[in-house]
Amino acid sequence: MNFLAHLYLSGDNTKLMVGNFIADFVKGKTALEKFEPGIVKGIELHRAIDEFTDTHAIVSQSKDRLRPKYRHYSGVIVDVFYDHFLSKNWSEYHDTLLPDYAAHAYSTIESFDAILPPDVKHILPYMKKGNWLVNYGKVEGINRALSGMAQRTPYESKMDEATADLIKNYDDFKKEFEGFFPELKEFCVIRINEIMRE
Image: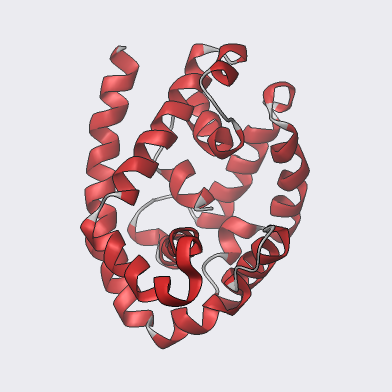
């Protein structure tokens, strides 16, 4: 769940940001019908980001390092690892201080309470209280996130053990993130321009 990346990649468009944030909790095309066009564009952007990420060669290198132990959960873990590097090195990507950006993101999402899916309404208070977006920049914050996700998965995922793999291969994951993320940013700029013209 790379929440920080999805928010950041939405730019300064509020509805894109909210749609991008809630997209993992909106299933199926018919579910889009209850949202206004600006939110739908954010959901579509999220899905485009996921497809670009899931098929990228550099991301595959990161996932391959984890796959023997974590199987299909390796992609989820890599998402969280990449959010760690974005959070930790935030000043390289955005002029606003991360605590201020995070506070704005939380309040923006809360302002759309009427359209938030139930699971988002459930998770948002915990995210805000634990300041996940900021604490992703700390290894212990990543460990809390992955441990919480491990508790919520119906099958044994071992995600609570993944922080050890981050520490062990820290430089490799960091290098892969730094190679991948600029390409993802460029893709999003182009895709947002396309979406807003549709």
